[in-house]
Image (cartoon, rainbow, N blue to C red; front, side, top):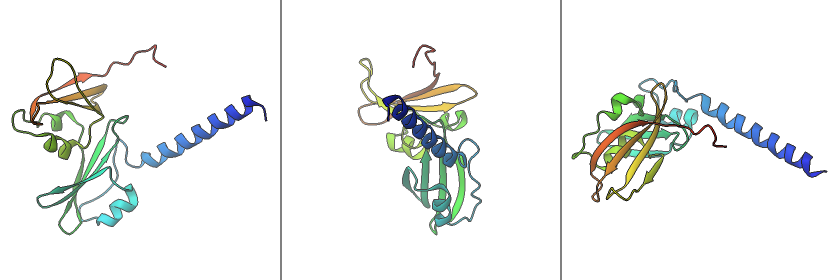
Length: 168
């Protein structure tokens, strides 16, 4: 088989795989799945799959379904001590980000509320990690959370995600 046919076949296979993955995620993308209160944990797992992370809460557990680093949503499914859904929400919103309290919240608090960040970076003029979340507020956005050396939030703010039209 000529190389050009093999390349075309590989591309077609990759496109089919990507389409299948996206179709699988469509059930709980921006609109989220329908998980009413009282839904058992096993049903959540059967419908949504394994979570990105599970976090202990004082009265139960939070299943985190994050689409970071490339996606812009993170679904949080809160369960009671009996493993029943209490509620669920999309965490990456302006209102939720505004709840971050510099000087009081820790990295663990941020990750409990928003899931793992898209990236953790360092810059020369800041002495601590910077957590970056990708989200959408009508336009593509970043939300940066600046931590000090003790992993305490010192500042947090949004910014627009500009895409270079020449990037390929």
